[in-house]
Image (tube, rainbow, N blue to C red):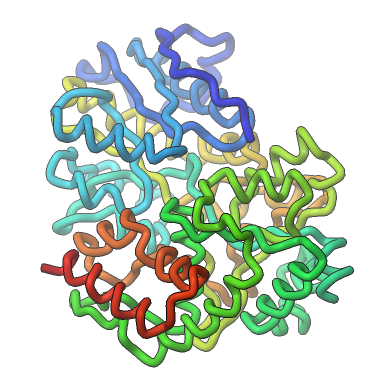
Length: 446
């Protein structure tokens, strides 16, 4: 786990050499004054410092005093802060939002259509999940950000999976743009057999069953791989289906091989299990590996990240985007929009990705060629397959899709997908779990 210091505020200072950084806009009269930025507290050491350095450089160039507050996702503090500010009508000018949350605040946010139009003209389209979550009533209400945006595919211990499950993940997903025959064997059946074998060796897969994003995203991806939906695109409850029963039949077996305390996992629990040598596989971005590189190098050197397994409906790798939005109560909306646009230029996005050890996933598809994913080590190439590539045959997925956003945000924040799996672990039957889910969903679609 990275060191999580208390929230700090510092006024913008001129940085040595700041003039050498690319300046996208000529400063307008509205770009002076002050800005307060609520930034997510990044899970990778040093990533926070790089963002702060960039923001302070922009502030110095534009004569804007910028304060940056780091807000952790632990305990849903980031979400709670956004909700409190939206209701109170006061707080940061720029706020970071996670996953579906822009949909909850859309009416209180400044449209960013003009910013997105310029960025898309330069860099092309964003991925499907960003387009789905970043828009409301035909307007971009937030800017999908690379900072802390993540895939959450499996990260496995190379030696342990080979020893106990007979799986060579490096052979399966090497540093190559060609698909291997071994990759075709990475299915949910293989995943289940590996979980059973590793649990027998005392190395239960570190998959949570709580209501935090890591648990919800993993459960949501498994459901989608079986073709199971809770609410369809029309807003109809469809949880009672053959596809969902097939998914829950699978999950009923899988949860037997997960930690007994999986229902109480927070988003740091799987990190701790990996770094502590207690598990052979987690579903997570490279933060656990990055901290292991610092604190347990022998563990880091034995880690390999790769896409989600293939199910009956395909492979769907969890994708959790973070977004930047500008509150309507901001007194410096022009400066806020200019800062966001500057931060999303390739010249700023790539250095942040490099410092974050390849953790940050750019929303623009054209930025999927950064060298960080090839060069990060040890072992070299450990996160090469972290970013989805065409030969992976895997699709970025956000849990609760394709429900209409105003419904999906409620399902996601309630943690319904993971709770369904946790009820199986507690001994409830599949019909009981489906009946419970129907009751929950009826409250969301009214």
